Amino acid sequence: MGKAKSLKDKLYGAAVLKMSFRLRGDEDSPAFKFVYPGVLRDLELEDASVEKYIEENREAVERAARGSTPAQGARE
Image (cartoon, rainbow, N blue to C red; front, top):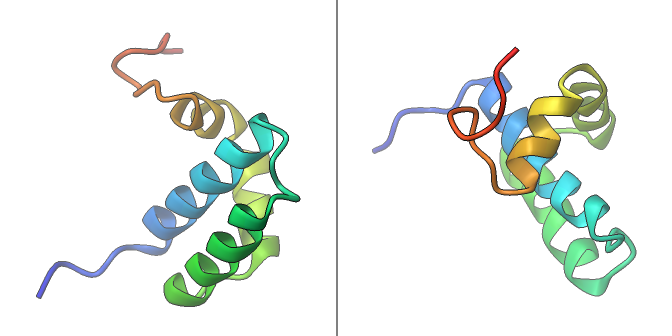
């Protein structure tokens, strides 16, 4: 069995997924509406918690959603 993910790791993953759709303007797409609720269910998260995480970590989440890792992006 793999190591259990921390709440922070779960929130980060869900936030990056949501942001990747948001940046493309695809939050209303059938793909998002199918995938995202399943991710929330599987990770035992609420959308409000994901939104709060996005607000608090927007720059890192957007960078990851665009495919840039912290090593590739500018560090503050």
